[in-house]
Image (tube, rainbow over all chains, first blue to last red; front, side, top):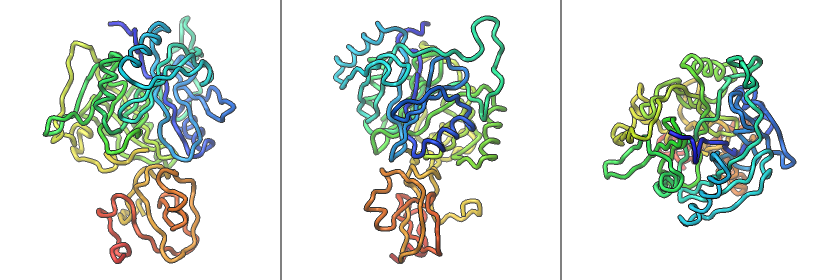
Length: 307
Length: 82
């Protein structure tokens, strides 16, 4: 096993309707740390246990949603290699100069059949997780809100999702860990991993292109998920569903919305993926259980509310 | 309304983003709104009194018609006449 090539989701660039309200929410409630802002008014945030300068970038805009999702690759040589392969595959590929996002190296941006913009980068300024690398404490004091550990993955909704899934599998080396298959045999949802996680990216087939279903942050225990739900109660945060259990990935989860209507998740406890496991298949007839294992009911909001 | 278990208007993100709770204010009632996704509510929509219920603040009694994508599931007596 080697975490070479694409290593992990590096950041998500999210549009919000009101920056001040959104920063308060992501810092005070989610527990991200604000690390920077730039002359375009974009705000940079990281979870405490992430080492790089940012994992969430907020931009104020007329409509919420996702501008792009970026993945960190192991080396600049990997970045060059993937750029070539994406070009050969026929995607529109563009180099974004270093520091266009503050503290991030050159990015390779590419489009996708599902209407989402993705990026790869190899370098980002390292701030550390606040504990140091010599005899560190297990966690830092002074954390806020839900105290999430990291930005973990996104679920994206889009048309022609198969084409996007193919890029991630065939060009970028992701594994298919789980899938949902319709009675006609079409894959309607794909869960993809570039690592040991059950998913780093999930994509679901949908009528409209380029939609964001959720941005997910990791917690370590069910107790922490429950505590996050308590914080949602305390501060009247809009809850979608949970706390509950996913069939797919086995995650213990709660879904809720940021002040602009972008769905967030905090979750804990998926399994460890190894590339020799082979994918898990869910039949669409079992979709209720696949999504929410306890209720076993399809939830209209979860399936259709997107930004 | 939601906390009271009333289901006349569909509920989505509650943040002005998803467009599920799209309604039209009828007969010139007075109201103001918070910021809503331009992708969901155009300037034309706003001129016609169309907005997202989650961002709608009434300044008088209002008559609403549900015009969102789930209107068939949640048809109010007002909207069924129109």
